[in-house]
Image (cartoon, rainbow, N blue to C red):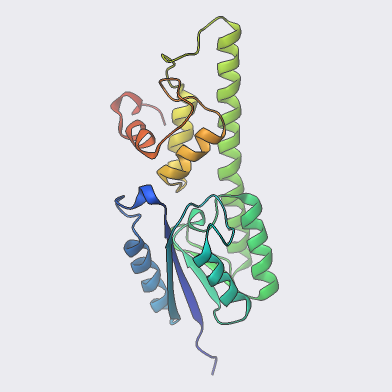
Length: 220
């Protein structure tokens, strides 16, 4: 008889997400615990409030505690609702995939229906992260090129700057891919994309207003 497997249910939110519907730690834990129960796995619940930008021990102590348990064989699976709960970086996630293979544990991402216990699931997980990062960088490049062209044409880019369709498409694309409001805002700030008023810093509340605005409802 095979020994009972143990799954670590990992849930994460960042500060601004505390009140967001469907993003709470409790909601994530409930969904993942139910999945583990269906598969007959023991459950260890681990959650934290931290940014998804870094996977360092300082920034993500609970995640690293979970990885340590997996490394020494105290658990067999790492469960999360989406890839971005674990990492928003292709490099970080690729490294984590390699580590899981070497150490013989697997990841299961419930909302994306991805299971790296299978070769197909592992492949699809890598594809999803790569596509998300590619789209983010591509839209950022196009936006910067558009702003540069406007500047060459003599258009003043100051406080009255309006959002381009490309920026709104980027925001909507990332949100559909599962990115949090905080992650989207951080990415826009990091890529130097100005806000509608020409500001240099984006906030989750600003991103939310754009997503809910009827002005941009026509943008796919």
